[in-house]
Every structure is written in C-alpha cells, then in structure tokens.
Length: 424
Ligand code: ADP
Ligand code: ASP
Ligand code: MG
Image 1 (cartoon, protein in one colour):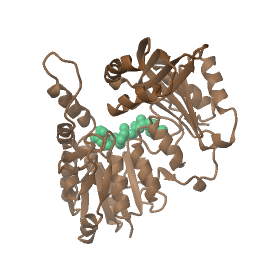
Image 2: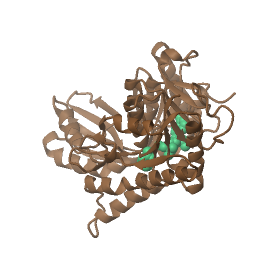
Image 3: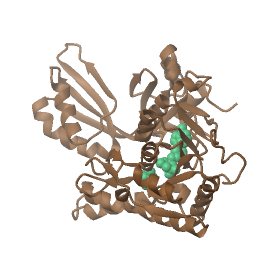
Image 4: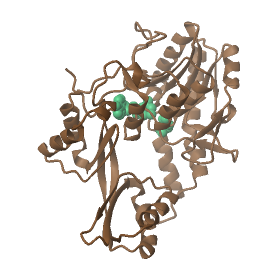
C-alpha cells in the first residue's frame, strides 16, 4: 500500500465526461489498495472568466485602470476549484468510491497574507491522514487556502500544482502525480514545437528554471516545495486510458519524474527551451550615473509589486550618464510607467521609452556549467534567422534572450533544433 496525491489540472476536469475519466484514474489507485488524496483545479477557462469579472466589476465608470481589492479577488476566483472538488466527489461516489470534497480552509491550508499570490505557510497533515484511516478519498480544492486574516486566499495562477505538492509533503506521500493535458515535461512546449521530446526525468534545478522562465507545466513554487521536501513528483497525462497497461505502476508510472541531478544518467548540455510572451521593455535614457540611482528606480517598482526581470545598464562615454533598460510583464507596464513618472524628478533622467509585446526565450541546462560556447551557438542561430536580440541575461544554467514577440515561435524552434533537441 502506498500513499498517493493526485492532482488534475483545468483541461483534465473541463466537463463532466472528463471528470468521469479523472474519477477512473482515482478509482484505479483506490482499487489497488492505496491511500489517495486528490487536488483539483477549476474547469479550464473558468479562472480566466472569474478574473475578467473581477476586473470589470472593479473599474470605475469610464476608467481603464486595472486595480482591485485582492481580498475580494480571492473570494471570487477561489470559487472555481470549489465547484470541481464537489463534482469529482459526486462522480466518485456514483462509482462506489467513498469520497468527500474539502475546501482549503477546512484542512486547513494556512497561507501568508499576500492575497492573490499567497504562499503556503503550514499544512497539518493529520486532517487528511484521518480521512485515509476512514478509507475516504479526500478531494481537495486546489489553488486556495486561508490567510491570517481568516479570509480565503489564492496561491497565484497555476497554484493547484503547489497545493498538491504541499499536501503530499504534509502527509508524507510516497508520490505526487500531476496529471495534465500532456504526458510529461518536454524539451520545450509541445504546442509550439511538435518535434519536442518527452523527458523521462528532469532535475529540480532545471525544472525550476523552466517553470520560472515560462514553461507553465508546473508552478515554480511547486517545484521548490518538491525539492525542499523531497516529494517524488511525476508529470503525467490524464487523457490516457486509466486502465492501460503500466498506468498503475507504483514506482515508475508513465510520465516525467522531477528528481535530483544525480539520478539522471545521460545529462545533456541543454535540457530544454522555455519562453515567456508578453514582456514589456522599458528604457530610461540619460540617467545621472551616481550611487543610489538603481535603488531609487527599482525600489519603488518593487514596492508597487512589479516584477522586474532583465536589467541592462550601459555607461556613456564621459561616464556621467547611463541608459537603463529592463523588462516587466506587459500587464504591469502602465503601473510601472506611473511609478517611474513619480520618481523622475528625484532620479533625474531624460526620457522613458517603452515597448510591450516582447518575448523572452531561454535555453536551460545543467551541462552549461561545464561547457563553453553554449551562448555563442544561440546568438549565431538567431542571427542566421535575422532575429534581433534586445537584451541578454545569463546564469550558471540558463541563457535568456529578449526578442520581438512575433519571432517567439521561430526562435524557440531554431534553438530547439540547434542544440539537437529535436526528435530523432
Ligand atoms: P493544467 O491545467 O493541467 O495545470 P497547464 O496548462 O497549466 O495545465 O500546463 C500544461 C501545459 O504546459 C501544456 O499543455 C503545454 O502546452 C505547456 N508547456 C509549456 N512548456 C512545456 C514543457 N516544456 N513540457 C510540457 N508542457 C509544457
Ligand atoms: N485555476 C487556477 C488557475 O487557472 C489554478 C490552477 O489551475 O492551478 O490559475
Ligand atoms: Mg497548471
């Protein structure tokens, strides 16, 4: 007997027929004698719809400003997962499986007070362990918890992955299975590059980079938790026949295992390519070059909760001025320009230029630590396709390149091929 946490994403629970299929996956594990807790997302598209309603409802008449009360945002958007948890419990009951749905506050999944992007602070596993003892499948609403102010909180987009891994850690599960609409983690998004290959294993570090650089197959925080708490996490498909051979394999189910790099025998130099669309570039021209300037610019942006990403600074010939270029999510561009407008006087710069619609394409691989020339290969390949590079950042195991949005797909495919990641 094992203890398994199974998480099903939005497309996997998109309608009642799919929920029935999910229930068959759950029943398979229950019939095999395992203790099972299930975490569900909202039906696909639901959370977007709810977010849209929040934005519409909070706009003053005639205004375009997207600013809303995060506590009420949470109250609204958490409702999608409440629906699917109840529906899956009902479906399981109809199949003769003892199941009950639970909301985040009932477990409770305690979070910090950052409404809209809360972090899980604590989960006492005993509530769910008691359910296992009663032979009950607990169906938990993902993405939500309860904040110190006693109100519902949500964990940021894609947060059900994090709910699942956190629950798996809290109940010391043998495995956490993240069921989604692809059958594992690929060398790049298979929707963009059909030649992408499925990885049987990927290291925690690489998965962290992939996720934080745009591969939304796992939420970043879920990978961090899996790494810290040593949760054996698999990404696998909910669309496969639940009773196909091997689906119930205890140690090596079909899918991608997220694991320590030592567990990976054949390490490639480059493991994958990730991309993030909808980045905006902001350039501040002729900024006075003196100590404290960067703090004066990026401090207020951070206070406004704007996530600044790539930063490039260039010093003028006479050493008196500097140009500073950086990126923010396109959705935060207006807010960023507003904040910069307020600090312009104190900092002193000539002009702000901005451009939305940029993309960041990243090459990721632990093998880069010990191989030279990986970046040069990327630059040459993009140049051969006449793709202009606007900014570059690197770390030990990744290179990120900012380009114009319309070239995203071409750049992803070009890099995927130049590092030999295409399917044979
Ligand atoms: P869910 O609703 O199940 O949480 P998501 O849409 O959040 O699913 O994540 C799955 C999607 O992630 C896939 O459909 C795929 O398009 C995308 N994706 C991006 N990069 C990758 C990658 N490297 N490997 C697999 N899927 C990826
Ligand atoms: N439903 C939430 C979202 O769409 C959480 C999740 O699916 O993981 O972001
Ligand atoms: Mg997701």
